[in-house]
Length: 582
Ligand code: GLU
Image (cartoon, rainbow, N blue to C red; front, side, top):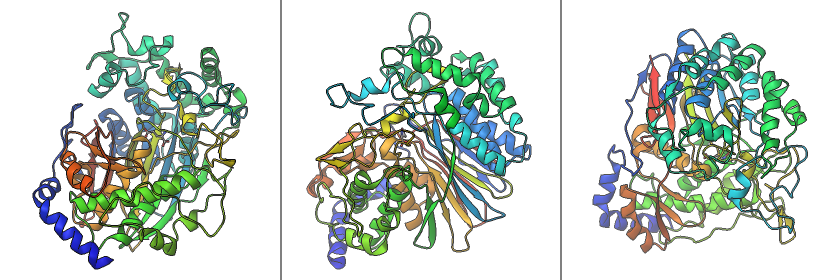
């Protein structure tokens, strides 16, 4: 099998060698929405990489004042709420991996939204019992989960912060008052009406559009006094301003006022919300140890499955850009996404067989299903030792979300993915910030063929996510890399692709980020539009793939430790990210 694989790859590579060579270069793909390469930063001491220059700067200012990585994370998130409102904010949820250098402790802080206590399996069903149209479900109160990011940041900052909590909001409050320039991306997302519900409710309509109904222009100076006031309350009272205080009342009022699609969120849901400290999931990969986030996100398990399946099925580490690489990636992804659909959900509600899914023998067997000769077609989930009678999930996730990484002068680090789910979330606003629509990450149907779906709606449960904050360690247990991305359920593919390439070949993390995306979530093979991936259509079709050319909205941010000990940033050219460090 192995030798056979080798021979086939040699033939394919020979045929498409010019293509493979071209994609292998450090090129930034051009796309209709525009790509740009932000300057790469090498830092000896401390570094912040985030999706917006003002957020990066706010985090870096905190580091310079002697703040820790977690302190800086609070400042970055506060600023992102203002300047990248479409993607994340204090009305949403997040997962943070935190590495504490001095105690060598890795902690997974879970700030995922929860379903209201009053929610049940009928949340997204019509009175006749059929699933509601996804777009109808998303806009308004129904999809709003209890926001978790603020509680999670407070929990982590109480343990690992060095600066006074209140000081971490200064930059965001000042900028909310003085205003910031609407970025090209924010303008484009408004103009493209990516979220059809934006404009339905007065707060968001008045904030994001002119009185003539035009989307705010690029460069428009936008201030947000309501958010400045909310952040001031949070700075002074802590997260309880949201969970116990008047800010919470505003959130509930917004949810209730959406009478065209009311939600079930109550004050008591906010009062009862708890961020959770979990154990990261770490597995060896080549000479490294790769750590991801456990359920309720599928990100950690599925990413680890993909890279391990690739390593088991390869004849030798595959280079970026080759047809063989992309074929291997899609096949491993098919298998991993099949398991994800069947087995993964909030482990506080469902028995998630984490060890069985990452077991070497199990993965070895699964990897035998990968052929270099042809696409396997739709993969079935694997059979696990423990009988689990569940049906497959159906929950679309659409791209918004933000990922940032921070390392401080003591070597502590944060890798955090934060989200309000769809761009502009539920489109409801309270206190100057958008409320999430994260509950649409649940499966709308609760059972199929008499079998329960793991990711069904249940009271107080956290919807399954795809967010994949990652950290990588070397054999001495020293931090080597941190990375992650937005992108809905494609996140896992983006992260796995780049992890595999960086840890298997001598490509730089930046070059890996720049290389075209090819995604398969156990269906069509999607080739990134306006990149050299389009040229993979013919060779992949020859292997039996059904292909489709599509924009791939990743927003990968990360850093990698160089041989001399410096941290080198990597920034997705597809977004507006930046890095600052020293
Ligand atoms: N809601 C998605 C999740 O939790 C993230 C959405 C996105 O990345 O765009 O996985």
